[in-house]
Amino acid sequence: MVFAQGSQEKASENADGVIEISYPTYRVGTNVTAGYTKVLIDGFNQTYEGKYRIVVEELPSDVAYQEKMAILATTGDLPDIVEGKGPVMDLAIRNGQAIDLTPFFAKDPQFRAEVGEPAILSNTINGKIYGIPPENQCFGYFYNKEMFSKAGITPAKTWEEWMTNLEKLKKAGFIPLTFFTGENAWTTQNVLVSIIGTQNKTANELMNSQSKIIDWNKDEVIYGLKLIQEMFQEYSSRDAIGGVYANVANYFLQEKAAIMPNGSWMIPDFTNLDKTKPGFDKKVGVAMFPNDGMIANYDYGYLICTKDSAKLDACWEMIKYFNNAEAQKIKLEIGGSFPIGPMVKISEEFKAKNPLMGELVDLLGKAKWTYKTMNKLAYPNLVYDGFQTIYPELIYNKIQAEEMVVKMTEISKRN
Image 1 (cartoon, rainbow, N blue to C red):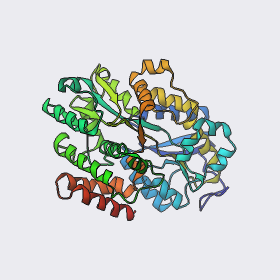
Image 2: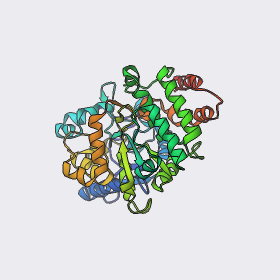
Image 3: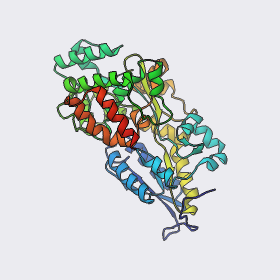
Image 4: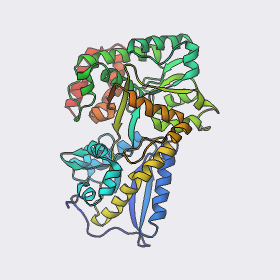
């Protein structure tokens, strides 16, 4: 087995002889996955008491997390276990910090079966397995049923109808969309990839690319950006330009905005009385994107990046504990996350008790088109820096869609 450069032969143990695993995470505080993450951390520390211990570094947001981990990846100082979000996985692999997990899987066929081959393939680079995704991202969009009813609309079947619906929501006095351009422009990008990915077979293949996209100069992308431009100019909140996820999520939860393009992990927020009012969950509906489209891809994986060879077994046990079938069930029941593997079935009883999750599962089975998130398709320098600059230019008519795809391509080439 090959270890990262600078490996040590002896683990750094605590004074009590316990091997400590350094684990930075943004899945804390008000993050929607904080609940199940705490359960897993506490469960692991209890199960391996006296042997292993997870030492958590809490970071305030996924953006702050990515920024710090990218710096540490550049300097070769990543903690023992990290998530490969944004540029982190690429940097960790390039710098030789990420450990190839293929030999571990070879010795553990049961865990491999619990994770499932599609999830493993999603984080396989050049034939080597580098990460295990914590979540299976499968979603359409949430909407406020009362607002839709007052506007006299139902979920759109086409993108033309989608635009008509936005106009009716606006005339009814509602903010139609929870768009923003800051951070990774998450909700905005979910709609953009949906417009592109539901146009035709060629465009759908582009939105399912196995490698990062460089050339964005395609008719379907231009069409999508023209619609996005209009959505920002006419149907988004005043603070959408430069806005962040927390703000727009609050608009939806406080019943100020009608449409939230987000995944199942948000469902627990709909009954969280610290974030919304009693009964809000009954007002939320879920739908496919127009043309029967849904996002379906695996999240970035957990990586082992320790330089201490004696810590590898401890890190592998943590990886297993956080992603085995039992962990997937915990994430489903507490956090509303789709299981990554085939062994955790979403029962009819569970769907009955969790109707929005049940609807999502049923919709996924009916989707004509599925495709990936922008985070998976675009290079990090475009996702986290480029779009923050060029979206405002598009919105303020300083550039048009035809020019924006050229800029997107130039930025991608510079990654």
